[in-house]
Length: 187
Figure 1 (cartoon, rainbow, N blue to C red):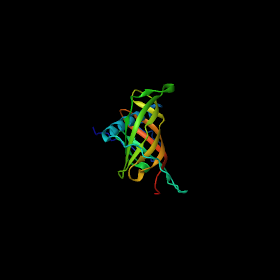
Figure 2 (cartoon, rainbow, N blue to C red):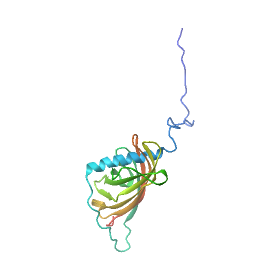
Figure 3 (cartoon, rainbow, N blue to C red):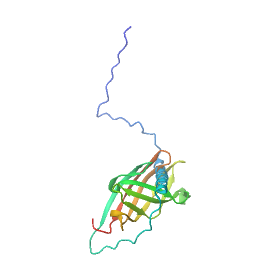
């Protein structure tokens, strides 16, 4: 008996194919990414020491505009940051996660950010308000951060970033940041 040969055709480039992961994520999974970020940032900050006290906020003279809009992402459990502030990010949990209003969980975090060029960006302590999706996944409801200086280009800088995304304590973190940074000196 001769073996039967089967032929097949690859799907057309225009044919819709559902991704392999479709349907595997729950609607509440974005929360979990935040928790992973918080843990990663804690480890990074713990290993990098504390930041010096914040310097006075910059005093801008004249009508010069030394502020820029920034944005990017942090997608990993190891902390690389992309976008306008690309480099690496870490954080230390200042307290154990605390229950918040309406079933939320609050993470008190101290950030440490080192840009690709080696400049440090210093932040005030931040509070991430999350909604637990599971034991290890948290969706970010509110996560504002405030820049209070740094080194190099960020010496005397101020700014505010908004962060959205999720933290998964097991699988990693995915965050998007956007906001504004104001520099003490003209760029």
